[in-house]
Length: 141
Image (cartoon, rainbow, N blue to C red; front, side):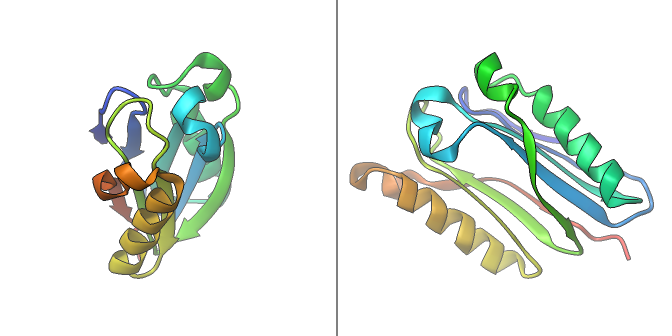
């Protein structure tokens, strides 16, 4: 399991070993209000079915410790994926709004898209501080 801690938010990407190739991302809260209300994230990959991946992503999101309980309680699936890269980017300074995520078959494109989202949601002074906080490739055949 990969865990990236930056005080608030904490991004949790969980690598698993089941034989499938299904993954999911769950997000609690609104990325537009991450600065004031935090954000919760749960990402899993390599599950046998989408349904199992979704259940596990929700479980990871609900176990998130870097956001207020009200935000964590809002966890919901935002996307499932197969044979793709998931990248989460954020501004690591606590109480800053920069946050973005992307899923794409190409790792570089997923990274660019997540970083672009982070920069769009950041203030002009903080755009340069966005960084990849976690990435995961769904590699099972």
